[in-house]
Length: 419
Image 1 (spheres, helix red, strand yellow):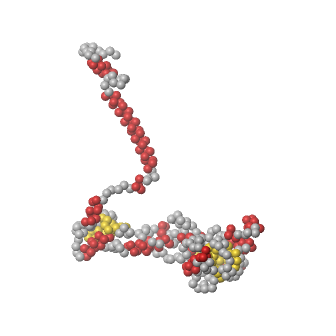
Image 2 (cartoon, one colour):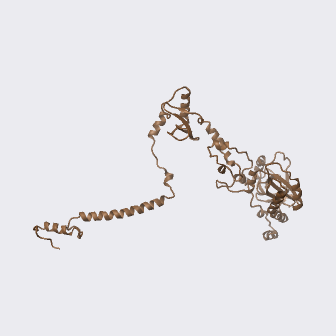
């Protein structure tokens, strides 16, 4: 037994909430927690066990329970240890979604967990991983086509639930006998799907958030590839599959909105005819109700984008045998002519924008220095003699001659200037 457990047993104010399971999932926000009258309207209690398994019990002894309390509840046989996750008015609403319909008579909450209950509970929980590894080996030796995904011991250690996955029916009667002889407990086999297994194990999805099946989803609906087609998602198996190797559940979240929006745009198979061209469907922005047509079926050529209203108008004209001169309407042509070009603000926030500026400034500085030297040299060449003091060495002769001319002195053709 752990030293922490021993220390807490010696305390008079023993709090069992310190020993609740840390890996539990499917958290629920009680939005009526701040209303005292809502907590006393029902004697029903929601208790959560390992991972996603929950149960609903009656508080017949009227214990003062709070969310997070560790309680001992009725089981068959013995008792189980779980954590209170919900009390009050919201429990009957949750029962409609989670509790089986055939479960009419609910079991009871015995008591709050005592130190002895916590001791047995910790011992049973410590055996779960080793039991799962050994059970997998036993199933493999018996030649059973199944995978044991998880093992959960009851709080008193008298019963173990083996969660397994199998594509076909499995005769595990011999397996139950072997497991009962090896582990000396009562065995219960429970078949789950790959989606439920992913929810029990947990993980992070490609969106960067915790898996929906381990966070809040309880009812799993089949997902078809048509959901991806309606949303114009690439049919890439690697991108469409989740961690359970099945199609992602989130493909069904927005498919209804896409189906409704697609009813307000023309079909992809309809061709639009004008006097000069035949236009084929290329792509569509469903929610903006804008369709782009091309004059070629296979490649984008002479693309024209029109709204769904104009597309329906052209379709109606074609059915009457009328072919308009242009695919765009007069209003759309006028708007296109008056449209202003706007700068892309997002493009300005490039990650390399500072590097480009530094390079540009450095280049400008170098060019500025070179231009400054050239400008200085040109200025000195053009500057007249006697101005601003010193003169360039190359222009000294001419400067002296010009100076002599200004002073009224004349040079004879045969004379040489003094050096």
